[in-house]
Image (cartoon, rainbow over all chains, first blue to last red; front, side):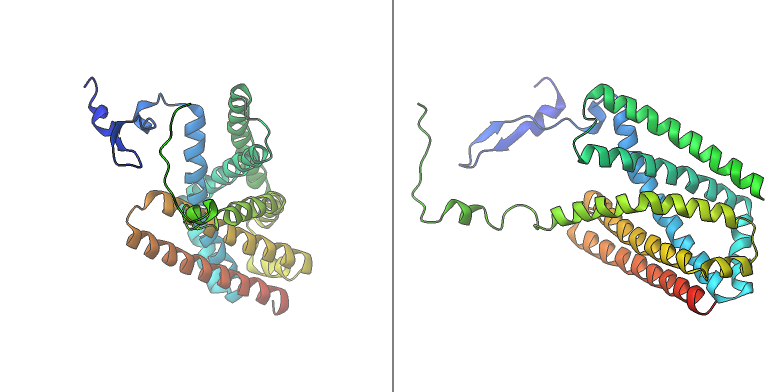
Length: 143
Length: 133
């Protein structure tokens, strides 16, 4: 046995014989890559946006309810934690938006070659940064 | 020719594989995630634009904005599609990472309850803004 992972290589065939069969490499075996980082970030931003969507629901309910309720939600969103969360949600939204479009292109069979995958990954990161900054620039100008 | 082991089975090939594998609703779930995602592309652009135009606005301005039929329609579309997309996405994340069947079932049902109730509340709020103000 050259590697502790060899112990996990034991599997059974359909007729019950044990065979040495390789497993797909685990995450820690891989060198960190841009593609895997974007993949997990798509999930993480999706979960973060779900929390943001619940806050959006609160904001809508407050707007439909009373001045007092609306002022409370506005006040909470204007605290530094609220602003930080809004900045985070803006970035998460643009990231998930960009990677989502990237996924839709993959789903119709485009952009699977490794150079294209790396190019679209870089494009996603640049688009997220530019769109997030642009949104906040416009927002701060409007205030 | 390698001789492969044979066995006499009366069942058809189709009968042997039926009932194996996924719960057979994966394709529609996958497709619905993509369809809602596609719909959310223009809707989220409109939403960002709307939020930017409402920044710092008093409640009266938000109520007037929500009272506009086009805004109310798009807002309703956004909330319904987004909450659907979100419930499906969160379900997949939970199914991937929660290995205990009991905990997975409880988590997914609880998540659907929370997402469903918040979605309904938001929907009701939009309808109230549109019809009552």
